[in-house]
Image (cartoon, rainbow over all chains, first blue to last red; front, side, top):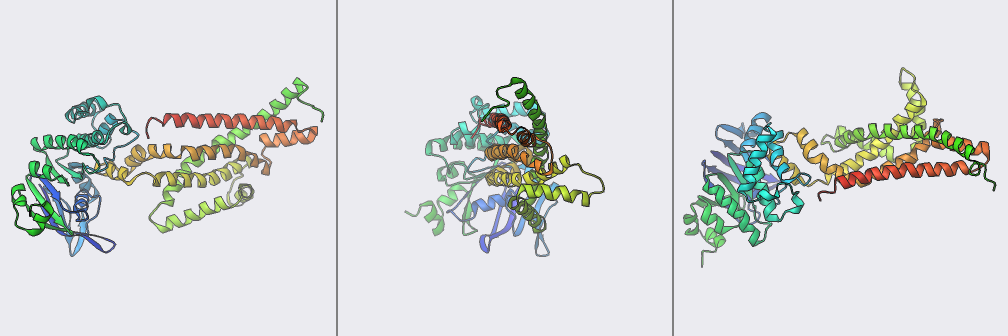
Length: 248
Length: 222
């Protein structure tokens, strides 16, 4: 479904991604793990077009976002890029809810403005999703009245309101305490059960082990190892063992 | 000191009526300046933040010029410049409006630029991944947050503008201050200045309350 091949990205001469490749099948949950600064978030941001890659190829089903042509990176026309963007959702570490809108407005504004969904339909969908993340009673609150866990669940519902085919999470629980982390992980577990395709950058090893179909370990802008949770946690690769602390 | 107006209600009423007539022009300058300079300031702010140096450079110089020279000088310069560059006659009132607009747009532009640049990058990123176009993003996500952030500095500018309208007298536009000066010299009494002070206080009091109303309106979120 999502295909990224040999992605390179540097910032001011610092190579952050040095040839990362990853494919995700429909309905698959992939956990992207690795030490801080390994390039996980940058890779996710490249997939969501928040960063422009220097080299490589990204495609979502048949839609090519970018590819190499005569040694130069070549992005698709803007309308194709927008079409791809709308098929992908993104949940950020710091939620990035719109502070001037209520929770309900946060959910319905993009479907109405971007997808031109009628208000009645958008509100119906938003209420179903708020119920799903356990926040039906917060519809008329503004983000500053929510706890971190609630804000992150609203952010997940907001992303789902756009009916994405794949949902990317960039360390969704890193800013939360253990209790609030569990609230958010519970919502993500439910999504995984419903076969939502997800790519999750996380430091939650228990979540990665229990929920992910595949774990990808990155370091220094490269994929160190990837495989099922069992393969990774039983890996003989010293770096993987050291990171996962399975080396005794 | 003998009181000429405050002891005679008829004279005081006549003086106030004359001053209120001048205040009409003051208000016209005030509202027309806001009407033109706020949107112009927003456009200038966008150009000031342009990635293209050919756009950004001249706009930065325009802001520097407006903020570094006296408004009085700008009013006089524009008053004498316009008849030279335009094929039609511009009366003194409209040349004052042009001068005030280009001056205040420069100040508003810097306020708006500060407001826009203070919006966290995450707001842009969230709206981008949700598929908003640049125009939708600006009007639906960024601008409402900018308005809240710039309300206080804009209030300052609005209150300064009411006082600055007195500079229109430089090119003999008859506004509140012109009337007051004329009445003082013809009556040899400073009472018209007292009436002018009261009227300026009233106008600025109303402007401050209007700005506070908007502050309260936007106080529902942090």
